[in-house]
Image (cartoon, rainbow, N blue to C red):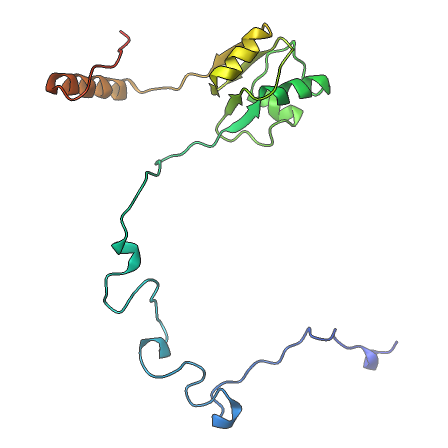
Length: 183
């Protein structure tokens, strides 16, 4: 091999299309931009504009609700915990929490916490701390002799006071029956 024999791979170099170089070139006169008007010029930002007609995204009704700060939880089934205990990745005798699940490789990253689901079967007596647990998961863990402790969300006292006042107003106006309040 010599320097004069070195070439690029076929298809790696593509020559630039030169537009606006005469009618015979195929991309002459208007340079592929069509006729006159807004789109023939630079700085066009149409994006949903329909020539003054009410655009489709404004004609259609809005539906649903998007939560302001959605929380993303790791969802783990009790069957997955049992499998990890069987594989000796988890020690069922020690208390389990998010940090131990991440260290064992059951959860990839902490996210906003753990939600325990009831799919599968658990035989080990475990003590686990999670953010949420389904009724089925609670029943499965308690049946095996274990316990679940939930992480309580911190509610600001002012927010709690607002909720109580709002509920009292609704009761007074007769809109909604009173919810159980803990005092």
